[in-house]
Length: 379
Image (tube, rainbow, N blue to C red; front, side, top):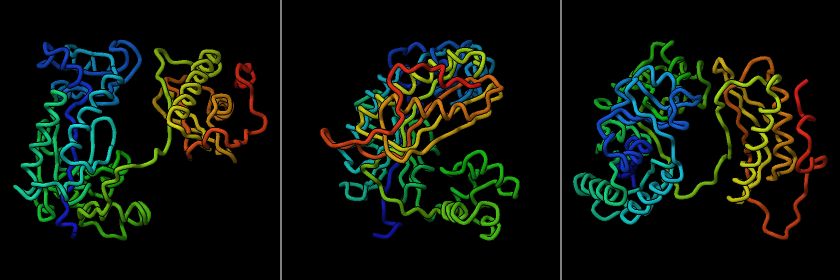
């Protein structure tokens, strides 16, 4: 099968968290609604998502709650209920795979589907099948989704975002010049804010301008690997298959403080929070059956600058005491002079845990649970 003959769908739930909340709050259906934190816009925290009415005021994911309230004083702020979102996510995915079983799970609210072997995919270039999928999602959850169908994953994801909410867009390779090239370069999944700014500095603003850029120019400014990705993406090339199972790359836990904390003056409070995050991360690893070798911490300072520090161990671990010991060692290597608003801990370089009864070496010098956190305090 040639790439032009493939039929890949990207299904994206519309303003998922906000839409789930509105199922039980139909009175808010026409009002701007943002989800985040404890639902208190005066508290520390960021917007997780916002409905389309709120987005018209400029409210976006990742925006501080206080800034969102400034943009739209009438916005209704609701706390996040992730257990509920996960339950609804499972329902829509189960409904979809009854029709198209080859699914790649890309998170709580989006999936890829390989439609190539699904009966009826040839009708209306897949539009009839997409309408069946949208109906199945609505019947299972009461929610709408947007679907893009294309010969590959890159174009399918672009398509799903072209007619939101409740959209259905079909793209072919022949549509590249007329429908894709006029779009901003940042619409390509994989071009983030930093890459967008660097491209703009080169006079490249649209996908079409990126497609026309000399290969040598991209190579000189982005390196061989990323330059090759940019050129392939701009020309609509993507041979990635729909992957039905993949191993996680990392596990992490983080929290945003209600008020900024100083790493020295508020050390005991910071230490207690980080210790709890390490314990939670260890529980996540135990529940999923993983261990890892790279442990790191993440800090967001009061000027919104991010800092990460990590250590890679010789042997894999998953227990809270070892995670905590290394996380505190990493924390001691971070700048201590400013106040912080977020702290997180992460485990990477994962592997499956040994089966019960197998020997598992424990790193030397591992502290016992309950060891005094003062030992790790910055000096």
